[in-house]
Length: 243
Ligand SMILES: Nc1ncnc2c1ncn2[C@@H]1O[C@H](COP(=O)(O)OP(=O)(O)OP(=O)(O)O)[C@@H](O)[C@H]1O
Ligand SMILES: [Mg+2]
Image 1: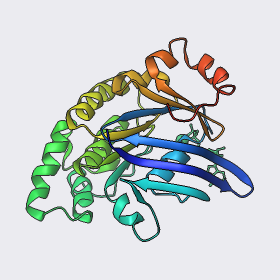
Image 2 (image 1 turned 90 degrees about the vertical axis):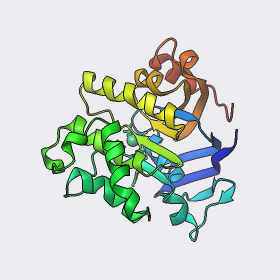
Image 3 (image 1 turned 90 degrees about the horizontal axis):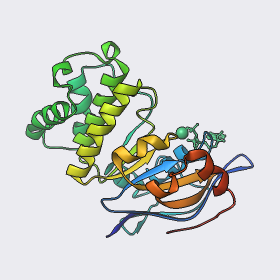
Image 4 (image 1 turned 135 degrees about the vertical axis):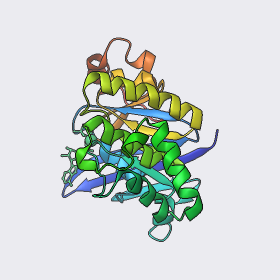
């Protein structure tokens, strides 16, 4: 497998406080990796560094073996997509929200409507194509956000707790569909969650973060066999790098 994203000796400071300290991290092409850890562990910060939305204080990020710098960062960033916990839809129709992303990334004009319709349909929201985002439920809005990201055919998809605010049945049904979509499309995915029970719907690969560091990496089914509380308490003692 080829490495698509790599982070080496990353330090990120806010003021005097070090909030990220990652010796080495690699994401393989086609891998779906879950990232778990309690509030404040640094999950979103690591996501933002890898998605090239935040520059680390020290260290390098490599995208397909290229060292990311100020000149090439925007081009690489446009090859990835992020879905956040809060819906970030524009004040225009659902259809236009998905189409806008494709226009910005230079997709061929003729190709855009069919791509938009394909992904709205795939996420079960094609009937909402002409609705404005403020009239969507939380679950519907997240389906549109995911359609918008997937329509871009991203080389890496970042999910920052996009299901957290949804009620349990909605969350489970979207997670199940997402599992199928990601496997079918083979999309490399970095999936942040603080709920380890969400992991099996998408993958069995996980890292555990705590205090800005990656403390464990391995198979979620083994790591979380006894629940998350145990793993997190023990993870503070065990410091491993790449597995
Ligand atoms: N702009 C900032 N200025 C100062 N501290 C920050 C800033 N952004 C994040 N932090 C701190 O960095 C730490 C890691 O934050 P981060 O948002 O990455 O955690 P997280 O694991 O995603 O948490 P959550 O589960 O609550 O989303 C936290 O202690 C947070 O307060
Ligand atoms: Mg977060």
